Image (cartoon, rainbow, N blue to C red; front, side):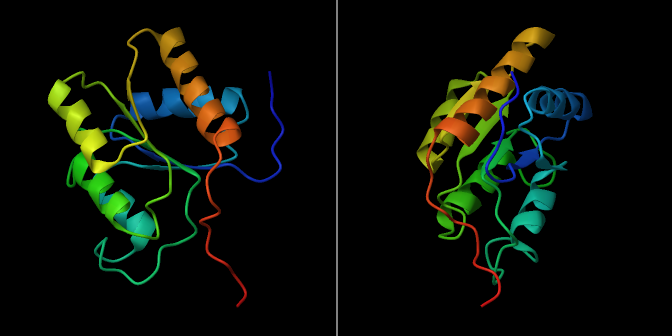
Length: 156
């Protein structure tokens, strides 16, 4: 089932594992949910992408994604710290963030929700289950869920 979009989909995938990133992108492309997907490989790169400079002290973020898929176990800056900075910044607070990780640790789950994650999904090991989980995440957060318009106004 291919679903048409009224506007370009904009997903930021923060994932250090190239195989998981490729599977995620393939699953989203399969349902035409990856028209404008950007993949970054660690937490520092994610903060640089979103804010430029040093993360939370930068002046203005680039055009913001509609959805962030975030792994927790990242090099340089871990996923919890990325989540904390995004949820503590008024410019990025409303962006839905879905943790997509292999960690089933209760501490990781509880900490993610305490910081403000919108959803926490443990990556299924089996390929088809993984593809289905990512597809359902994309369909829900990009097509069914309603968020405020947080994109910067251009041309003023």
